[in-house]
Image (tube, rainbow, N blue to C red; front, side, top):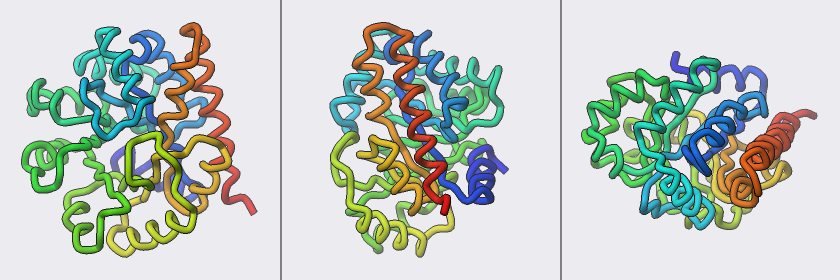
Length: 270
């Protein structure tokens, strides 16, 4: 089994959801970003999404757009992002890492080279926001053939007719975007989320993780009662934006991660 399959299977046995954390690689600089990445598992992150900086992250709101700008200003690139994963894997062989971003940097890097180096560095899966299933041959198919999971985004506007196409070739987990809009936007109602999860479960046996708009331990706990995973990104990145020093950025992200993890872990305790 892949690291993602193993992690979600373990958590299912424990009757709890995964805390899936998102940070942008290289934000606010390489060393600080690596310290955050290495510290996330001990702070309670079960799965880590690592953003690949890009100049035009069209699905992301202001917080993650600014994180991309900070990372690019610090000269982060795809090669350095893969190096971060290699350095993370020196001490951690268990926590799944999913690279999340857009196709342009991967295409520029070269798809065969990217897949080979991602696999070698210890990446477990990919979320590529702007590559629809009609283009599976571009990246999804060769990535999965190399052992990388390919995780799809589904949204409130993905209807029952479209879902089978979106889910075709999906692996690892399904990422449900709970609001129609960009990252960091307002949160969906729990009733809406519950209905969405039930609908997705009719179409797939994959774990379902929910993100966009989750900012507090209480919100994370509420989602953790309904889904297999809770994704938090913008709230963590806001800690970096507000920090006055590198250490404050590390402490802010890991402190919030620990609070979110406690919320998720207590969510299903009767």
